[in-house]
Image 1 (cartoon, rainbow, N blue to C red):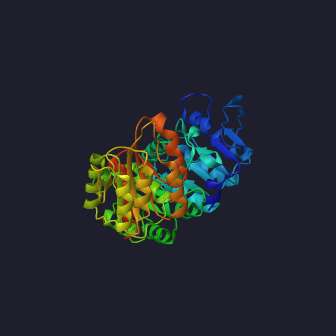
Image 2 (image 1 turned 90 degrees about the horizontal axis):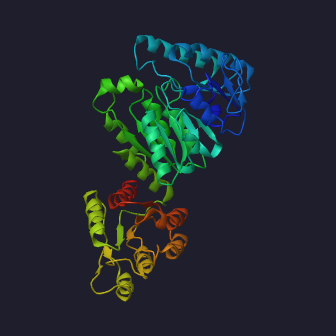
Image 3 (image 1 turned 120 degrees about the horizontal axis):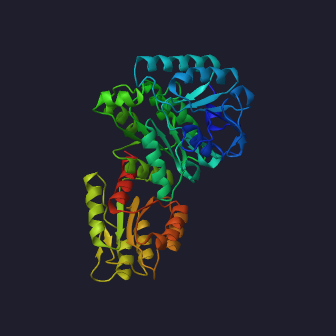
Length: 441
C-alpha cells in the first residue's frame, strides 16, 4: 500500500479541480497550490488555468503519486480505477455517501477497497476532510485557511473531519501549530494502525492526539499503541448514540473501556474534551517524564493556586512536604503574609518570583512543578531562571499564564522554546500536571 505517498508525495493531482470559487475542487486547489512540487488540476471540462496551474484532462496525463478526489460518491470508484492505472500510490476521497449512508454507498466503498487492493493504493477516507502536513507544505484538504496553518509538534488523527478541523484551528489560534492532521473518515484501507507508526517515526511529531469513534481494526490498533514510543492521547466519542455514530463514519459499536485499557496500559492518556486532548498532547510532547507523582505548586495569587490544588488532589496527585533547605531559601525570599508550605504562594508577582520557582523546582521531594503567575509589565516572566532550571534539571515545569496577549506572548514563546508548556487558565494548567501524574501510573 502506498502509505508513503500519502505522507511524502512528489506530485499532487486534484481530480475534479475547478476555477469556480466555492466549489470543492477550487477549495482543494487553493490549499494544494502551496505544495513545493508539481500540482495538476484534473478536469476534462476545465479551460485555462486555476491558481496558475493549467488544467489537464486525465490523471494519466500527470506524474502525481497522490490524488485528491473532489468528485461525487457515484463517480469515485471509476476515479480510483483511473488512479490505479496511472500509477498513483495514494488517494484522498472527500465525498460522503458510502458505507455510512446506505447499501448503495456500502457497495461503492467496497468497490473502492477492492480497486485499491488491486493497485496497492492507500486511500484516506472516504468521507474525510483530508490531511495536512505543514512542515512539508502538504495541504490536502478543502478546508479554507488550512494553507495558513503553522508547523507544531502535535499530530492529530481524527475519525471526524470536524474534530480534526476544530483541533487544528484551536492549536493555531493558541500559537502552537500542528505537525499534521489526518482525517480518517470511513477508513476504507487507511486506519489508525497505518498512520500511528508513521507518526511515531516522524521527528517533527512529539505527541499524537487521537479522536476515536471506533474501528474494526482494534487488535491492530492495540499492537501499534504497544509499539509506539511517542506519547499518545485519545478522545473516545460515540459511546451512546450508536446509530448516529454509524451514520457519521460507519464506525462499529465499541466500549469506551476497551480503548481506555489499551491506552492506559501503554502509558497513554484518555481525554474527555477537545481542549483536554490538545493540552494533554502538548504537555506530554514538551515535558520530560517525571520521576514520580509529587507536585510542587508555586503561585503568585492564592485563589488560582487553591483551585489548582483542589483539582490535582481530586485526581490523586501528591503534595510532598518541602525540605528544610527549601524552607530556608523561601524564608529569605518571602514576605510574612505569604504561604510557604506546598503550595507556595507569594501573594503577588515579585522580583524574586523566579527564585521562588527555582527553590521549589530544585527540591528533591518535588517531581513536577506547576506555576501560576499574572503578567506584570514591570517584571515579565522569570525566563532567565527558567532557562537555568531547564538546563540543570530533567523535571517537568508547567506554567499557567494570565495577562494581555500581546504583552505576555514574547515571554510565553520563550518558555515554550525551553520545553516549558504554558496554559492560559488554572484548570488547564492543573489538568496538564495531572496528565503527567497519570502518564507514570
